[in-house]
Image (cartoon, rainbow, N blue to C red):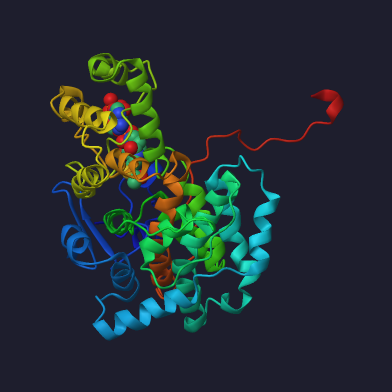
Length: 405
Ligand code: ACO
């Protein structure tokens, strides 16, 4: 590792690294990825153990505070989250300004950004108490805001949070309950959702987290920074990949399914086409993404619970994975399934609309963003993020009067 900052100070040398392929923009003690091994640790704990033994709020506590909670700490933490699940009444009216057919991510970017207008008592970033309250508000309110975005687009009344339920069951309630019918969240589906949230909770300096840090480096408030992260996450090369992956599988099913995989893979490999195998490939993992393995397991569990063992989309995805993993194109480029390859299938089976997949990713990643933002604020080495460039434009020239141009 070269400390380019001190090299720059001594010699003026700087690096050209578009896409940050080989540049660390910060030090962080939160998440570790070994891309060659396919290993992911949150605060030193393997993702497999966390996904098996912990719930999402335990994971949030860990990412935020650095250690897993004791029972007493967990109780206080979950109680605080429950106290913040409601949103300001005025904010509920803000939804009315959006078109009903707006993409939920468009609504989320706006709604989360607007929290800075409603919760002005937690905007002082130099005050650790303000930072803490803002963090708890974000963790608690994201499910409410996300479910409300969904209810708004389908024209159903908003459902109040139910604080007697755990985090994921409460989200299912706000999504699928209506005032006129009794609804009890299915515990298998709630546990599956919890696992999805754990698997997406943090992933070191990905594009959206780097966006949150860059926005935060200017001193912007946490709600504005998280809104910036949501905007970045929306892109199909990042959080939008699960939505794009389901669209790809649906398209392939419409064309004939498993029998058409060969033709499809040929298109992906054709350098003149822009077709990609969505849900495959990763900037850091050059091995199987450990989250994808867990997600495939969860997919089995959910489909069994719902009696959908023969789900054609799941079968198609497994066949596609098998063929791709044996194909020289994918093998030589070390392209493996990433977390998004199976997450869309699970969510679709649970009844979550495709357009909300990335919103659920945002909900899950909020804890990672806020933990990273908090770490950055407390880092004495942190400066405003300000990448340099290699200028390729015109040399210095004089403005001619318009008549001579
Ligand atoms: N399908 C086909 N070819 C691919 C794919 C893919 N999904 N991913 C990478 N490649 C190829 C590239 O064309 C390139 O080939 P080349 O060397 O012949 O030019 C090579 O593999 C290297 O790929 P890059 O694009 O340079 O890798 P990069 O690290 O920049 O991109 C990314 C990573 C954006 C994730 C890419 O693999 C991709 O677009 N995948 C599909 C979208 C996706 O699933 N995104 C989710 C990422 S995980 C997440 O955000 C939670």
